[in-house]
Image (cartoon, rainbow, N blue to C red; front, side, top):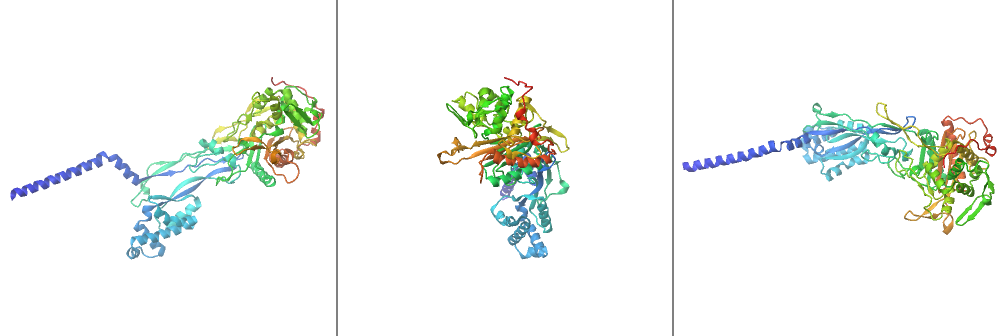
Length: 631
């Protein structure tokens, strides 16, 4: 019996030793082998890293007016554990119904308390969030996440109001996370230039994208320790890294001019119902863009609409506005003087595949008269003297076929066909001379106008003036930059005189004239290109095959012509005119004039004291002091 007892004691002892050994091994495994892993899990449950959002840099106009800024918002989250905790629920219901907490704990079971508490929380959320607040019960039943989103980007004032209600009603489990969002004071103004950001506050288009590196700040963080109820223990706050805000981008855009331009374009959209409408205005001396707008546009908040910046990404055949290039080249090469007669074949030219017709039966025209009358035949005669290869070189020097490098997204380089790449060189030259068989952007065309206005220099157009940090220090700045001399100053001035005649009594743009100012300009009227369903060009809307006549009309010009302060272009794609003719001089020129009339006093440019008729001395002018440019 004693031996049996001893064996039992030994067996139990061995069993205990084995059990404690297993326990010791397990303890060793947990405390030594998996120490770092389990400590990390425990710390993850105990510590939380709260993001301290940085403020994305602002975008302002040339006068410091805010175009875009960041403003604080809050993301609202629900903590499932705390929202459904029986004690927390009892506290919420008791406070809501004004009954002592202990009575509710005795009267209702935990499930009923949870149901009543969720109803109170939903009602509280609804006071600020509206209908969304009532979705809490559904969300709780459908999600298994401990932490779930209740509302995104709640305005700061609304968030503060909700915080106060939650505190007042003893609610636990609703958390707030500070964030920043983009705010656009005017949701349609300058939309294509400004661009937009995505949900991660990353720039996607426009200035928001091209200057994202400067605008984007660096978020900070704070490590906090949570108690058993998952609330922050303020006394145990740990590491803290403050945020670094983004820089401010200052544009060359003038908000006053921009706003006026967009108002005028909106009115033109109603009047003409065009497919597209584009306008760019700049300082011809510096290359600064003062206003740029396109229609259709888009809503900066909802992103609804057409986000394509047509002024730099859409190409057109410019039509007669391009005739300034042939004239400038002929003057620059000293092939003609202002008094050289150019035979225009009495308004009708047909040789081989080349067929040209003018609006009038013009015989001999002087070079400046070719521009004034917008003679297609005269422009071709000038281009023939220049030759196709040399004209191509001038086209490239004027900036056509090359991106300007402006700090915006999706700029198009346009298309200029090199001579020798077409079957009929003569036909191709005749088309290019009058602004066909070439694709240009409105920005390229206005920059070519600026080249004439400033005396023959192609300036680099720019739309960002500078970038400054939070302390106001300039970290990047743009300055006026002359890319190259395109034509001599003499040649540019002669073209300028011819462009003044275009807005005169006998010109094609009388409706661009402004009392007290000398306006130089050129009209353009081109047949609209027809495309198939795949976007391939299949001809023109020229009234053939039952298709209606459709046009792209434009007017580009500058003023005051004697000392230019503003150069611009207006392009109207497929206007619908109720009565009258559809030409650049009748549709686009009045839009230009309306803006320019407002811009002159705004820019502080006083009317000229010299009557406009006194400036029309081209007929008596004699070309002197020619400076051969090249070739």
